[in-house]
Image (cartoon, rainbow over all chains, first blue to last red; front, side, top):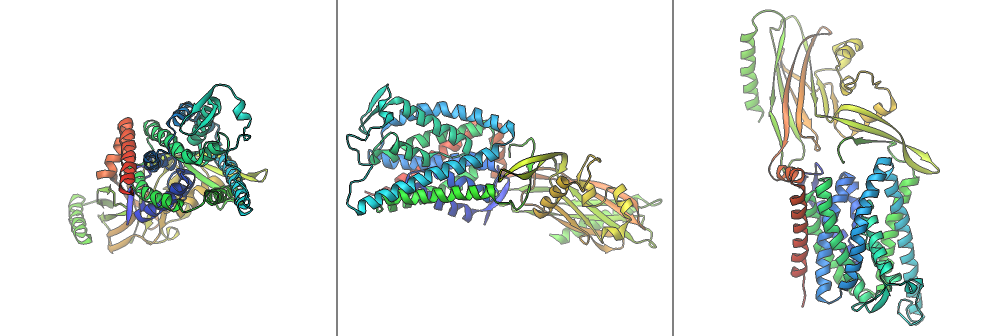
Length: 309
Length: 250
């Protein structure tokens, strides 16, 4: 059964979209990420114009991350102070991101930049996650304590920065500078690549800010909800490319999948979860790399001028 | 659906015969439906064109060429080249006023209908109908790849045996419309050839429009961007909230 998408201007099977939402939802629920880094390329693969995919995925992520936010909120696993600080940086980053997006677009190599950013970010983050998780799994096998368990001596250069603030919920005493900075960077990357940035945010919070696992995913979900809700309105206002019908079908599958994902995540050790997430991210990254270096099937591509598509 | 169309065509032929009692051939056409509606269940459609030749001379045999042209758009065709081992878009060419959809249907192969020179002069055939600016050389690699890509996507169709004559002076053709049909006015041009030369031509038109939810969403997103954005965001938050309640356990 096909459904006509009024903004993307093409009919797509409703079951394919539901299945896509469900599958990406499982991943996002399992790892507490929005799943935009998977959803956006998959929608483009289905033939949906890239700009529509980017704008609509923002709406989809709003739904799935808000559902996650509420679940974590009930379990008091949200550090609202840190979420606010991250968001402050994020709002600034969103405006810089939009400026950078238009500049790159006018230079004519936006597609290449996006592919490059995907390649570098995905392989770097995926690789780090896989390496770190393998190390902690090995350490556990040898009955040694996990590296992430905070001990008094685990301070890094980040802890030497001024403007320190005590985040009570997460029980970290850290400078506001890296918190604002991370919020800013995530937002810039999110706008350009059309992703929520959760897959970057969660590792950054864990490894740079040393936020404990108890609050990291809930807090990341708050930031993702806020930035993606804002992105939805911005995209709708500036480019008119948010496809409400596509978003509705995707989020229906997505929220259901997210719940399954969240439940199955509870039965998995955190190291194994991080390994799995790293593996998926790395696979998507390699796919982008392969596309850059392999000879394309069609050397010529057509773009409609005047339209945003 | 076809039977009533036949009736329409029949009355049209009768009317045509009365109007033109003397002189050269004339062609009259009817396009059905006059509006293609794109609703939530749209997944491609088709139009039927009936044509009738008035003042036909029984000694002549006629050829009919029906060309449907969708709304025109400006296109940028880019070519990827290898730079330091990476494939990047390098050279590009812009083509203006290129049809978003183009279908050229005839009753027999074009080279049997008229000479190549004649076809070119009267802009008959897929290749000769695409570019508004006559300076474009159809064998240019950018133009050639544009055409090939659009043929692969079924946006450009050339069907030399698509038109069928139901009588020596009445013909019919059904033309499929693509899944990604652009909304707007579509031009239908009919050309009648006899003995390798054009003897009559006419034009007609039909519209492609969005209706229902599809139309509502498309219009709202453009005319009321802020409200549309806030509403979409609201739906997303509501969906997330419902999901978190529905799946709450204990």
